[in-house]
Amino acid sequence: MDELRGEQAVWVFDSETVRIRFETKGWFKSPLFKLLGTLDLPVGLVRDVDFRPGAGRKKGWILNLRLHDRMDPYSAVGAMLDENFQPFRLTGPAKTELVAEYLADQLRFAAGRAREPDPRAVLSLVPPRPLHVLTSEGTARFEGDRLSLVWSGGHAGGYKKKKQRREFDLAEIDGMEWAPVDDWGWGFVRVVGRGRPVDAKPRTDLNVLRAGDEGNEIHQAFLLAATVTAHLWAQEGAARAAIGAGDGGMEQAPPVGFDDPEWWKRTARSAVDALRGPRITLNLPGGRGAGSDGDASVEIGEDGPEAPENPGESPGGLREPAQRTDTSWIFEQIERLGDLHAKGLLTDEEFSTKKAELLDRI
Image 1 (cartoon, one colour):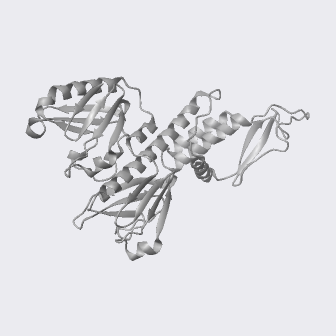
Image 2 (cartoon, rainbow, N blue to C red):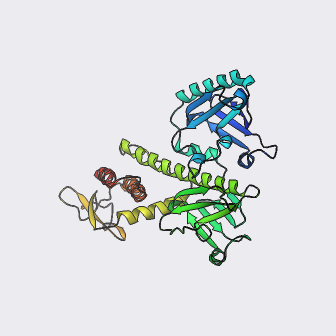
Image 3 (tube, rainbow, N blue to C red):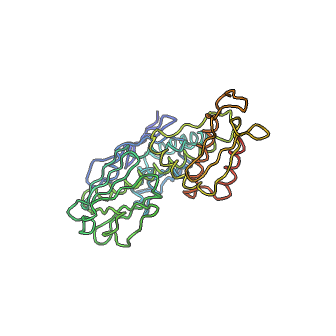
């Protein structure tokens, strides 16, 4: 186990994970580091290791870890942090340059051999839910798959106090924005959601929670933005993986869903809305009303599928083995495709092609 002590943190590397223990003592230390405390970074999330000897203060060294796309939520939520307070950046004195270079080489080698990271691995870099943020304007709470903004602080304007609160489901959030403190001593975090009008003035924007420059308010807002972003990435990445897992044929086991059943309900509703349109007919094996090749017709309209009379019964009156499991799984994949299409993650052509492939398996 290799250990490297720098000016901002201590990094401990065990060939699979970099444990980052941030230095939190002293008034000059970053409030963000004090909020984070410790991070466990899987080496598979590292895309590149940048080591620069003699480039730091008093000819010290600088070590930066560059993460894979959609794996660094701290660099994706608006204005960049001061480079001295980047979570995956470490600096140190010239006397420890050889130790730092050795660790950089070890990290680079391990990252090159690591497997492609799981989309949900990004969650290891942000605080667990529930996450509660308190500012001069009010509070934000991220719990389950719901984010709530409540304007109850002493610096909340009359308009927001009258509205009291706004809630967002994670499925309707497109992204998060963070703005650092401006010339008037205010920063803010903004929720970017579909169908949510945006006010140019943060003071009256119901998608915004403002934070003052006292204490660690603005860093709490930043941490909230990064945490919600990480969960959005994890959700979308896992949904893509689930769709991809359906390419191996019907013998393949259905992909495992998320732990939260409410998320799948919302996904299903969104997918059904996206798929609504003219009534179509599918031919399912067996059942009454079968055609020349023994298939029964099922119509799908705005109210969902209409099951054939006495499903599973052949024209001769004998019951056949139920086909529900495979067919249900295919419709689940189509529902998930609809959700990805509605979010703009699939083009119209990709959505139509993949849906046709799934329907052909019935």
